[in-house]
Length: 112
Image (cartoon, rainbow, N blue to C red):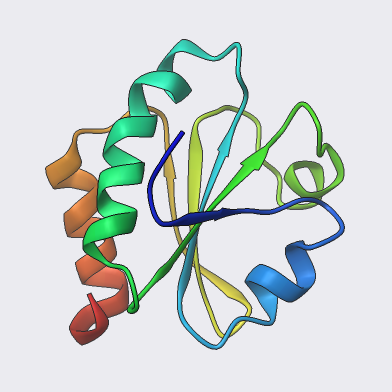
């Protein structure tokens, strides 16, 4: 995988996502998930596009089960948008780039 994203874990989620100064979008995924793998190139390209404005992060749900459970994630891929440590948006399932971009821009506004 490439792109300008960070990988987060159950242990780093509080610091890297909830404690982040910049807005964060987290992709909850698993290596066996076809829709997750299909979403990855779009997510990675957008992480480059919004570099320095929004932090893009990926969390492998197979290796980190506590955080998805705590957040009520029932299907993947799920992307959750955070600002100031609070969830401000959620996208469940494989979506086109334009839909993800509209969600980012409507949620984060001028930052995007």
